[in-house]
Length: 208
Image (cartoon, rainbow, N blue to C red; front, side, top):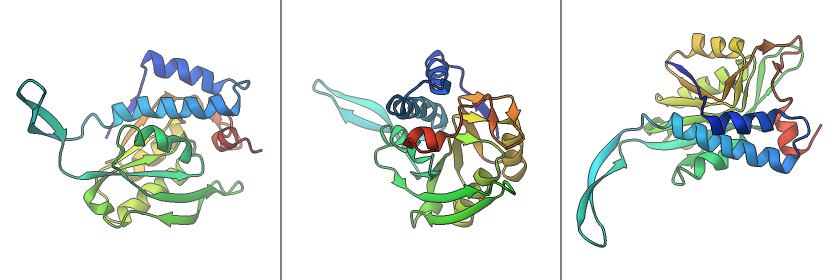
């Protein structure tokens, strides 16, 4: 499945502000929310719709509504939580699941510490949220978790991705569509995306 790098001027403008080291926490959160909303618009464009008829104040008219499976939104903790409201503002009826993974700084491998998914996730379109796709190990593990729970239609929304992380996910899960705002140069010796924006979780929550 494709990787979509969204080049819309609004996305790129907000991304530049997001990268800026002088951007304060409150604005950083707002920008993550706004960028996610714009990326979610792109990520959901293939959702199926069905014909319905509605009555306007003047007459009946044909319209379209999203059909078939409903949606589950699953942020990868903790930084993915900063993206959640952006998706829910577009899809307020979505169920929410939580996937807690952290990266071992020695091995760069994912360690699971929390998992809570909707009981009917197998019947839903799943949108995973992970702002920084670096090595891709944690993200690929999160995809595997929702697949093991029965999900088959999976989309991943990220803000910044490294080519190495995208390759890791595509090799393990070629059926997942990935939508990001930027594909950056690569990873440094510590496994951080460069130029990137630093640690998204720390910048979202004001921690070090």
